[in-house]
Length: 445
Length: 160
Image 1 (cartoon, chains in turn cyan, purple):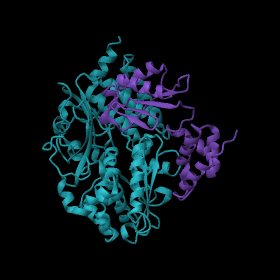
Image 2: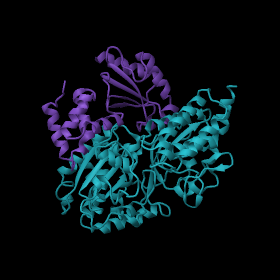
Image 3: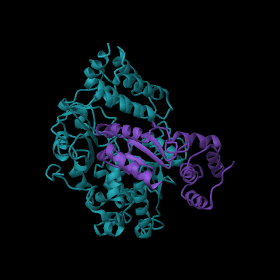
Image 4: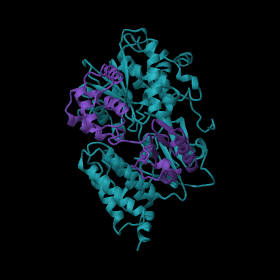
């Protein structure tokens, strides 16, 4: 990657390119586990305070401040669990897998510190079933950490006990949603739970539980090392540190990159990821994983940050029908534009069949709907069937409005966010590429 | 015929049970142990897991059928799964799946007559940066092209 394009400090990717960093001796030589040694000499609250100061936001998609979340655990709780969400399954997203492949001990150390902060003695790492290699790498790292006393009865020589267990999922996208992940970890079907109660109050085995994303936790050792203030200064207001992004699709250099929060999306595509392959022009960009509303080539000159993308006039808000804005249930009735979500940027070149891409995504959501609540179970399948027949040139007059109507019947009406995760791209594609859908149907008659 | 776990599996199960505060939490790990030993999760295998964990068989049935990675039917020696989700689709995932179909002469969900290959279409494997991806048993192959499909399948056939 051109260094100047992503001119930033490296936190989570600092050991990328060093194949030995997987081994604990190398990780230690590079400064690893110093932060954990430091943490166990601090008070639990002091660690939380440092992370609050860092303005570390969750990197799984929702972006909730991590330190604030840790603070929700009741002070008098007897048993507390930390769960690492490594169920990376949002189409287009592959940063966590890559991070752990290069630097598994950074996750182990970050999880140990986080576990200590929230007074947990048990960490469960819930990893996607398909990531067999990464599960092995992580298990080896954990075993090494036990061997050196970073895990076990007295973590890093302190008086705190810590156990860490890798738990494999078995092929269900829904388990990336934290409450279905907890049900799955308990040995049940991965059905989401109603909130409240929130996991921080009643989570795994009905005990207070914090669920954090892999990348989020991999920032924690550096926060302890350099201080929350330093970390906060690397980012923008209320959003500290850097971000890992995963770029895929029709770019020259797909891959995982650590970039400053708020870097221009256009810069990411044309400089960080090397620009478009061949001499192609950008047609569309899915900016934050398949659930985030798609952008046209005219909408990508925006800072890659949550607030900027939610408010930018450069991004046309998502509509149900032309002229009728979609109500995403945001505070104050704010319109839905788009977001950096899970950091997965999927770039599509001119000539890409947007109807076919949308139909493929709809089939994904239909396949992954857990079946618990009706709008999502029935609606995702219905959208997938209609969108697929349109993509195949068998669409009927009225199908475009029908898809919008179904989507509006699911949006903001389900137990968990999977319903919205299907609706947002559906309506996003219709809003931005409506003509392409209509022409495909028109061709039939 | 009722199934039983081998001594080796029983050792694994003992270790697994030590990691959780109750038996139900070991449901997914034990289904993996059963799949490894018996090849797929038959109704008998579900009963065995239920018995081992003192759970109602209906609970284990509900769990086993919820997750796609538990094979309820026999699969071939090589379970070949092509990703066709968005990033792979953009980089030729459907061409790869198409070549797999013609090369193996089967559709997704089917197994070759010799029992060597089962073909599947799989959702995003988190290998979007090196798309298209194909998973064969536990191994993931990156940057797969239709020509590479021919090589991979020929190599596996030669090995069998």
